[in-house]
Length: 238
Image 1 (cartoon, helix red, strand yellow):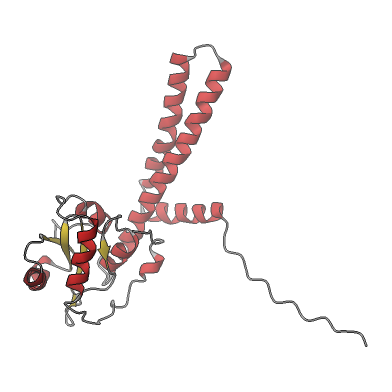
Image 2 (tube, one colour):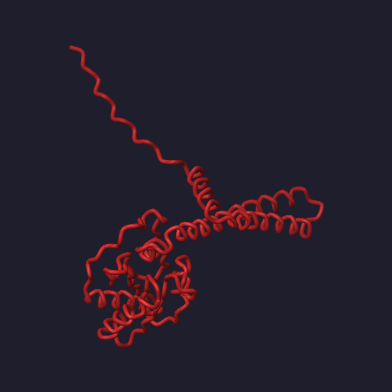
């Protein structure tokens, strides 16, 4: 009796290749950031121009030297182009979710620098206005980030400061405001703003402080609908 062949399992569709992904990121970035093209072009051309100048100064008349310097300049230009593309793409992505509830949580999840511990979930949320407070612990101490107008989030931040100070009276507590106010911190500048605080904790103390204030309890409120943090940028290990 002839054996019937088992049907083959359908192949899993492949995702877009690396070059196609880069092109998609480039299109998205230039759509929302018209100046990005000029920044990326300058980032590529400057290393190339510098390599040509160095070749003419160090190895004048040498074709091989000129070619080697030119190749080095092109590779350096490509690297600079990708760095600028990544930063402008991140800025464009955050620009699309600016002002939406949960935007700060997206930044803390995906772009927080090494040495900081935080959660994408807020530690306090106003049910009426959807204003929120987020908390991060790092070498600068405890940072409380208010998402919403400063006039409404200041009191929420002060309440959280008192809670932290009760259990950790010697740890500095800083405020950051992310909202519509003129002096508020833009989303893409949250990580760099947190890195400016004077060092107050070492690595072991950071985790000890985080574990201690985690005992304050969580409000259990989810991030309000409107932002999917996983679609902003792939997370980096911290």
